[in-house]
Length: 350
Image (cartoon, rainbow, N blue to C red; front, side, top):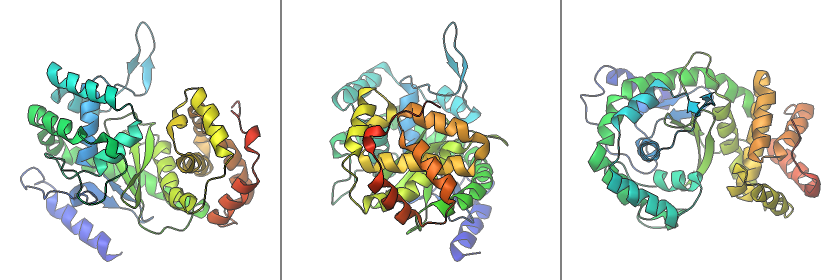
């Protein structure tokens, strides 16, 4: 066991039973709370981030209710995890602050990924101080930190988050036990890791959602995760694979033909239309990798990717099924992207 794992486990054991009694240190933009950060044998760091929680606490208070649909008529109803139910019950927002948030969103109609990336570049709650020095990606979202701080002052979001830390840690431990084997299996299809892969668990989002955002020089995966012994963690595996792939994609210019594919995806109003060319390839490849290592969910993963507009996922899935990790991922991506006829890329009809 590596020294980092020993240190994390020791600190985690010391914290059990007294998490709410000990004031936790403020986090920097790339630091994680040891009690809510676990390192798996695969090298995956699974963590909960208070800034991400604060952002989605605001989204939920504003009416965001995406989740597994358990009823369609007469009005849709989504199923929420106990952690999300508890958070939504305790964290409200005044009408005046709702208006400030809505006005900000109207003035900054950017993707949720952009909001996540900007939030993860901020300092710790409750002030959410913007980073000094070079501006992070998403600088046009400057001012969001003031709204998050206002919500913190009004709804005491940090107190709710800290009260939930024992349940959050239990969720992380259970999720890591299920994710670690899949991430190890995925490694044969992925570029060599240049740093530990980080995945932030988002308990206030739809378990099927995921994102990969650049925070500084690091690609961080974000995924909705619901508790449960047989929970569907395919979204988290996709995010892990996409985050591992993105740096390799960025090292080479994206093929020009991708812009045509993205244009068609955007015209249809599909979710993937907001991605950059590099992120689009990384997400499509991540979905294909997840389909390979989770064969029992393969058809659903590919169908979901198709519905999002990640039309390359089916092509990558066929390529990976034939190659089975024999070709290094960097070379495979470079070769296949260089030879693809992007004019023929379209929904697979799964």
